[in-house]
Length: 281
Length: 299
Image 1 (cartoon, chains in turn brown, orange):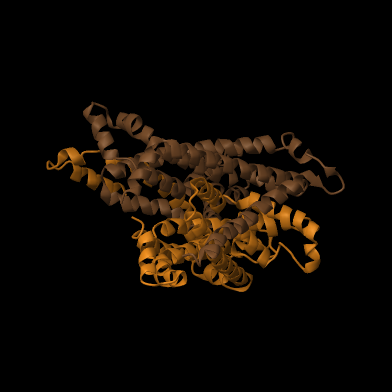
Image 2: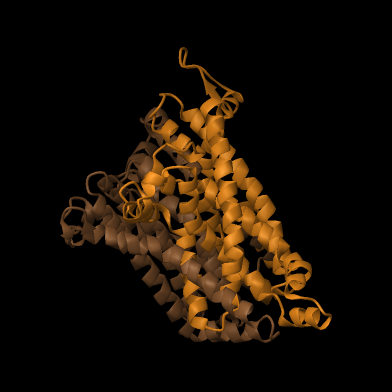
């Protein structure tokens, strides 16, 4: 042991240091890039102009709206199913797990190719049927519902994993049976007994979905909509500094949100119990 | 799906063990299954249908056939597919090599704050790089990037918009993904095994070669495959960064879909998408059993 000590002590800081360098330098350099413009010296123009730039607020609000709708859809679909699977129906469990992993097998670009094909059916085959109005509504550029559907599918694997991890730490059956013995209906048992215990997992699923929607580019760009990420790329041609500034800000905001979430998750009693339970062999 | 749900409900009403089984459990999963059938199943079916439909532009007649699939494996499309495979394999291999020591450094560290911070940061970087990541690298190492200008990298032949440039950028989300995948497995390595190996006179190297790596092998391989799949599917980063200077299948699909190069290539784009699904399916078919196998050591 003694002979190894210098080497064993040195490798960890070295690895962590190199990794820190690789992961922090692009962020730091981006900040430098935005404030140190060649020929103009130190300037914070790139940041102060963001709000006033055409399209920034509309695209950000569109992304936030899409995120809220997607989170609602994902949680409303997943929570009852995940809780129900814990309570019974073991035969459905592999089905739900497979369904929630399927989006991993279809890359976003392939998925959007399929969606594009379906959307073209509207004008091509269905223009004289009532369904046509549905297709038009799906693609309303002010609030493209089709993106909510696509994002909900894409968020399923992440959200399912987060919820499943949370549910594993909670004895759902006992909670529900206790609530039912006290006279609560199934919905009330779910809302008042199970959900409060899942707060951490629900937040986790919601934030992962939020981050996914805010950063999503592939589907929106190929379907011709203009949420936040697409706007960043569009604006980069004319305003390189600002597109980088917005990128850095969005990375940092997502990061801080998720770090805060990890901190909050660590403090909830459910999470602590889970950790101690796992710690004992 | 609905049929099996009805069966389960009917079974639940059997008199024996009524209390247990009477929960509305199967019904609660129905909305999820219906939603995925529509929002995911219909586009997937449309993709399959389009990929297998060959149209004759002159007559407008269409027929089922493998024409698009054959076309998607030839010429520029073939180059793009191979380019994607090469890029993903290189980046995934490197990320696995670099991610393992990083994960071990984090897992074996006594500081919980460091561990939480690195794992959270990893989950952000692994999944949500995309456009911001591309721009951060353009600002750093692009043609007028901060480091490129300060260090005069351009004179040394550096270009971010090349194969190795993309590898460097991809590592930014692949290394964290590797850390996330392998950290639980590293956590599962018991101190006792190391002590036992040492008591039997093994050196650190021997311990890693004969004990730790064999135990980790399924997770490592599973992680590698997952990284490959993730790199293979990446589009936003490459699109925002290189345009189409590096041939990649995702860029080909988007070009063909938006009619940038040739008009009427939509069905070939769908065939290319199908190729991608096949690759991603293979990736998952390898990854999931390995994941299950490695999780045996975790509990």
